[in-house]
Image (cartoon, rainbow, N blue to C red; front, top):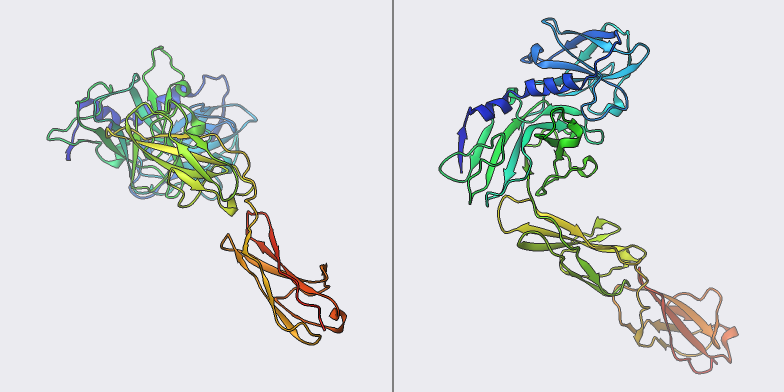
Length: 454
């Protein structure tokens, strides 16, 4: 694989897309006759650029690019948000276009990564001090397109880092402070990913790795690409394609978008992937001890299918064959199978589809004795009798005992041995063994009776 540093016009536009993000946020802030302000100062770690940092005001319920106002910093780090509504409180976030500082929301003590934890600041407040911290090490976001030269029907206008849940812009992919964007492909000549996905070579995976900073270690983020829209004044939210997850292609829904954590070394973002045409099916009886069989559905691409059985939607450890024998721990749960297709052609995201769930798994059949319990010892008052548990058709059983006098339970006689008493004289003694196993009905077996006790 050849790695070539490039400064083509397309890549340069991406590498300096702080301007694009700034324009996006400014354009998103509605024109308003409001004139209330919030002012303060931002402190930054050594090496950060004041002129690359913006303070953003959000209403508490705002999503995506729905900002109220933005403000840049002056040479002292001071800012003034001046398009606010009097009497309204706002969440303030900091975004560093260069990626030198970690993004976050203002609290009195420090920046926090989630809007839900932000301190609300009332319009008219002054003297706010926002303390920033250095960014986590850059994460290489790899935009991946398949080896057969296929590209989607949409083209990218920019790649963004978003806060999960509300989709608010947190930063952008390939920011200028993270280093040069690196165009890579398996082959002797570098083939950069341009503003249009159409500029691809056939037969090789095409990708571009863009170092992305401005994140905080251990914090969850998601990604979005905004498509070039057909209308003149596009709605940012309506033109987004979100990160689908490891080996998955993009999704159009924020609620189904996957996340990665700040400080992660590398994230591969597959633009295209296999899609399921039909769902897998499961046959067999939903009963502990019975075996279920999965049949894979169909996908839009050729490839190899793997299986993962699920209990109430969660993966069952080690259950990765096309068949699954129901366990005691499955009792009362609903079981399904998730199939994953790994495409034959490299560069495509995997296709994933789950079957419908079974009915609730019923108890397994009760264990049966293949050889009855036996009683040994002398049938005479004062002597001790001993019970064997017999042989059973299941393993992993636990056993309990109940001694019987002429077929009726003897109070307190629940051990594997029984000392005969005067009350047993003239009676016949037997033992009942109960066998249990988690997820199975209870099994019982009874021994033959002794001779009449003397």
